[in-house]
Length: 101
Image 1: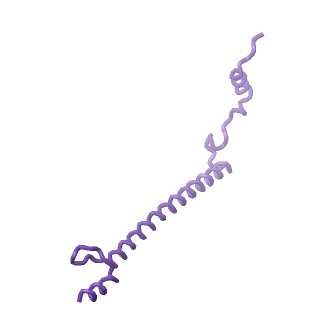
Image 2 (image 1 turned 60 degrees about the vertical axis):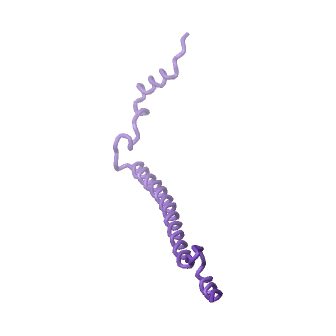
Image 3 (image 1 turned 135 degrees about the vertical axis):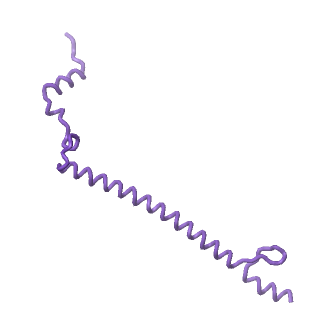
């Protein structure tokens, strides 16, 4: 006696019981089903979460750039190059002038 192949059994069941092979309401286009609303909500939450995380990462890099620029400006305001081409602090300027006189 020959045995049936499992795929043949699935095909026979689908032909005999067509309601088992029917698509869900979302697949065949019932836009007013609760399942469709739930899937839309889930997609919105996932996109919102991804957008929120990307916004936080972007804000971090913008914050780091602003800190770097502020530090650069502070350094530029606090330093100068003397007549010998040496980088000095503004605090040393008065001391250097006083010592040179």
